[in-house]
Amino acid sequence: MRECIVVGGGIIGGLTALNLLQQGVSVTLIERQAFGRESSWAGGGIVSPLYPWRYPSAISALANWSQGFYPHLAQQLLAQTGIDPEVSATGLMWLDHAESEQALAWAADRQQPLAVLSAAQLYQQVPRLAPGFTQALWQADLANVRNPRLLSALKARLLQFADFTLHEHCPVMGLQQAKGRVTGVQSVKGEWAADAVVLAAGAWSGDLLAQMGWALPVQPVKGQMLLYKSEPGWLSSMVLYQGRYAIPRRDGHILIGSTLEYAGYDKTTTLDAAKSLAASAAELLPELAGQQPVLQWAGLRPGSPEGVPVIGQVEQLPGLWLNVGHFRNGLVLAPAACRLLADLMLQQAPVVAPEPYAPARHLQLL
Image 1 (tube, rainbow, N blue to C red):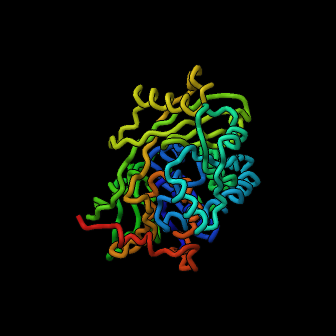
Image 2: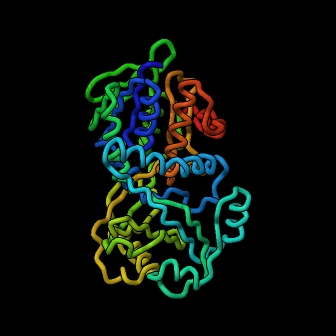
Image 3: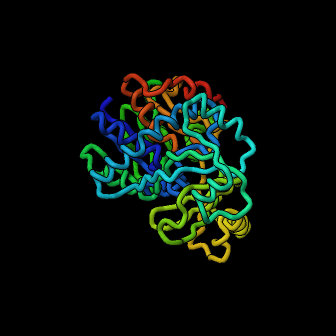
């Protein structure tokens, strides 16, 4: 394979392109908006599923590989572009969680360093927490990445390759076929042909496949976030309580998230979500109660059943490859998912077993 088209310029499309370029493949990446400005930009950047013990082993396999790779990826991108993605191993604390026994059993089975903290220990770790929490699960090695900076670094790195072409603000209208194969794409700016097409368009991926007569179980799921500003180091660790989290950035910004809304492609922020997120912020960190958030935004996750992504070639449409449906864990799973897809495309030994992600398990004829 010499030439590939990647449809979608988020973390999945971008890292897929990088993996292929590093293997000598020429890549054209086509993005309907600006590179890296959809779901990948909008997420919190926790390099872990929120409740990893709830997920099937297919998610764990990708998450574990990616967690180990992120520090290396950040170091590489910083050295190559001068942009630091800020992968910060702040640790993650689950407060007063009802599934502690299940979580600890999961951690023991997978040799994850999950510990139980007493009330005294958790307040020593995060003194600014609201009073009244009695215990916590704690994993000290979990990190968060500052995803807008990660995407900026990734774009800068891709543009360093002579064999990379980026088309932004260029919606793809359809896929081209010849002799039973997918051979390229048709866009608002023209047509392009290649040896392979990778569909990595997040929540929009199902629309293109529907044109080809296939139903992909991926739908947009809105998430809204609030951003506060404090002093660097004000919050030392990530904290999670009843589905809501606070994430510290190195410069003192604190992310509070997130909502889970099935509202189609509507990315409008709402007053109700702002009030709900602000209440969660105050419930976790009382000092934020008197502060005005500096920003509210929304993104559209590519929702899928159980959150298991679809990765591989569509057998009925040779030449078309999928890397879609990562739901809430696109940033978490991206390094492994994109490496896996490149391995499959280039007929190399896969970095993880590919069977759980095979498109044949997920696609249905319309």
